[in-house]
Amino acid sequence: MDIKAFDKILSDVIKAESGIKKVILVDRTGLTIAHVSKFSYYPVDIDGIGAIASAVYCASEEQGKNLDIGELNIVTSEFDNGKIFAASCGKGVLCVITDSDVNIGMIRLVMKKASNQLKSVLDEFLAEKPVVPVSEGEAGDEELKAALSELEKV
Image (cartoon, rainbow, N blue to C red; front, side, top):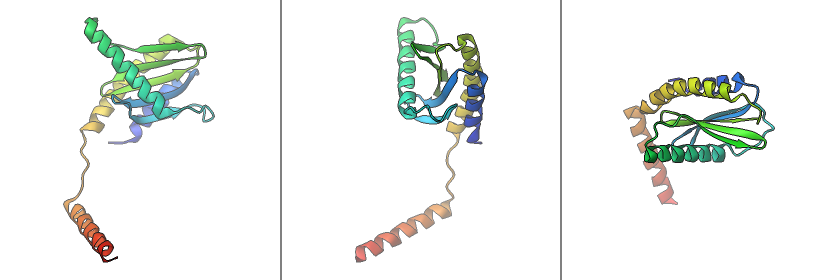
């Protein structure tokens, strides 16, 4: 699994529309998986914004389930100076931060395509288990025991 796959998909999203400022991928708990920015001088708390976007999306999704009105497609928050979009991508949430005059239809189209790509990459990424060779793990245990023994002598 190529970890750079996330960055490539997010980079494609940010290049798709000139009004997109930031793209953040978070898991359903709000932890940031990947992000890209168009301008480095646009400072924001990426982790905080991603966590809030995930919480808003998941809360809206729960409202829809409680009202039995179907699957949630996208959450849009409109402000005086910009918009925030959030959409599901399987076990993650894709968050796009834009200027206020962005083409909403284009954003929806780009997010739908990216969400499908991210869903399959995320599923593959989360399905993989880390591989730790047995000999390396045992060697690490021995090194730890030796280090602890040295500390006990002090």
